[in-house]
Image (cartoon, rainbow, N blue to C red; front, side, top):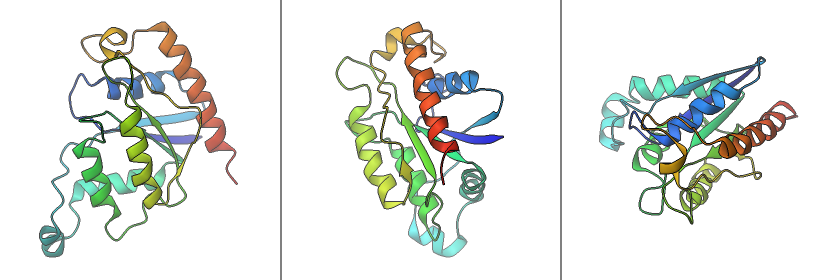
Length: 182
């Protein structure tokens, strides 16, 4: 059994990025167990708070889920041409005293509004962050879903058939990459 953890960089219930993770979970073959984690409940990083109380339980729990997974897929929204604050904050907390992603196989997907980027800028910024965390990020293929307003329903569920085909190909490549690791 291959264990994959999906983490969305969005908090909204109807997030299209969380919707990408739900679509991936639905597409996963029988030998893959995929769960989706939320970043709800992770406080803003504060060094004084860390010194006084250590890592919050929500961070410890997410750390344990990441370590138990064979691979991690981050759904990376784009806010103001970069990574969302909640996603960056989570990696900042998780990295404190921990190599939580060291040598972990990581994939990045993302959905955004508009034509040109489809979260490309945020994904490239996030790749820099992941490099510092010693994650092994899948180089190709990449998924930048643009015009999310046309490809997802009001609940954030993927409805576009062509996008589903590309996402299935991406998942196949990602699983092959995770499962063939040395």
